[in-house]
Length: 235
Image 1 (cartoon, rainbow, N blue to C red):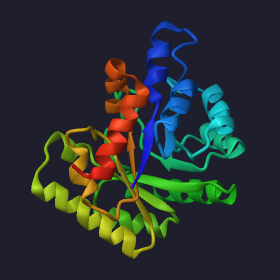
Image 2 (image 1 turned 45 degrees about the vertical axis):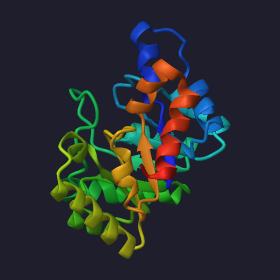
Image 3 (image 1 turned 180 degrees about the vertical axis):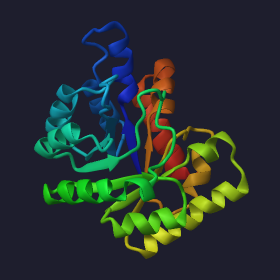
Image 4 (image 1 turned 90 degrees about the horizontal axis):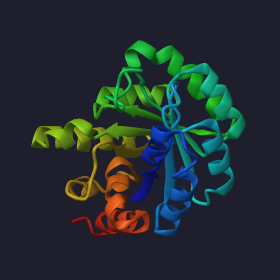
């Protein structure tokens, strides 16, 4: 199971003071050196943390794979098609939200997602759709041409009931049956990630906030290696 480290909140700290530091590029390199299997970042419409400059440099220096989260904004889509990250993960986005609040409502935006997916894939970029752990949403993701789905674990992390966990399991199995890669993320930390690791068919976890928060205490390399070890051991 791969670990993708989201470096957004390194840029968040940078932007609170309008400085050039801390640099998310340095964080990405340290994360890779500590065992990260990929680097994830989210370029938002309001550019509240990650900027175009960051993605351009990340594309040049990341040695694992670069996964960029984005909304259906056409300007951002056009930019990413020129930079060509390895993966694009399409997510819903509201200007008022503190962080991504839930998965895509594919029934409402199916046409836009279909068009964006076709354009990204024609540029050689693999596409993930960030969705709720729901079998119908997984099926629709497959019909829309996604290469992978990322299941939103946020609701389960906030209230880890057995029913919610089973929905993640069921959605994973549907995705694998349909030939999709299944990723997961949102709200995962050292205390709860072991449960998700039990679902062996999930191929990638994208984790940001808890790793960056932990890095303030122990450094990013140790924070990444601790998470990597927890994922490998499954405890």
